[in-house]
Image 1 (cartoon, rainbow, N blue to C red):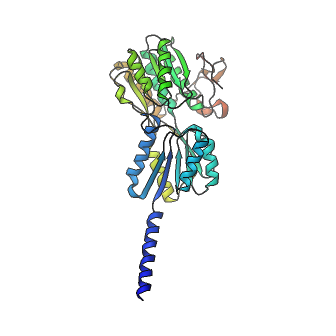
Image 2 (image 1 turned 30 degrees about the vertical axis):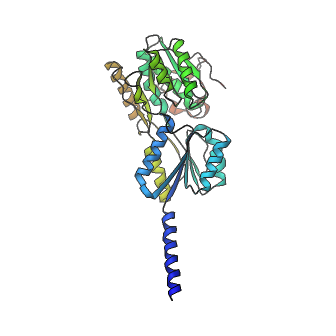
Image 3 (image 1 turned 90 degrees about the horizontal axis):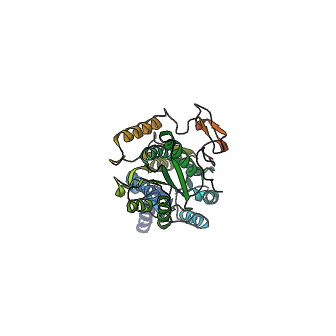
Length: 360
């Protein structure tokens, strides 16, 4: 009887332990940059921290930073799945095919891919309407440039980045018909040296405003060293460079989404979805517009922000032509009316007035 009692107690202990482990949801995050980049990856990791704060010991998170886009990403995702991850967030466009490949091998693991478009039964996609924030930045830039030259540092020529350039340009042009955009492609998401060099070249070319779709604060530092150049924070507030050169920012707010999707896995309600939210839903935030911006420009920028948030205005509203002069949107039409190559999700063309070419 004594041996049976001991075995029974041991069995109960094992059952309890197994139950505890089963109640812990494991969530992985694959990052393209370091968590201390001050921009894109920093904000994604703040989202991971929000998950921990929301669920406590009901969740276990893991992350790997600075994972190159390519085969190594597939290795990292596979390793997370083998370690028991229930949900994996892959947080860069270049992880798209690797996410699909690994998800096919682990059908019981849920995957969420940021900024991509390929889905499957266990792969969701999510992104933010960053172009709404670029519209606000362009509005401020058009008002504040004295040289009429605005520099733009692009990462890769994918639709997300091209949308941002177009949105910033047309809103700068709307308030300053003489404005010109000069674009440099860095072909990286995070490389402070390349980003700083790009900013310096743009400043040498006469730009007194520099926008970026790269993730480090190096362009802010280059602008600060040059003097009389303004910048905008990318993905994060980059407040260390305020009130000038950084006069405002786009802030990515991933926490609520990460919490909701983790909860869905816990509840057993997770399903493959496509999410694309903007200022109105709170996924895109406009950082403080600092005292370096004149009061009237700040007021008009905030009015633009609010109209984008409540849906009374769309950032791409016609009449708008493509770069070659052909009609894209007629008067009163918005890009919401279009899908496929003519729509925003696949945008691969510049709008009229931009004089550089979209790289292949």
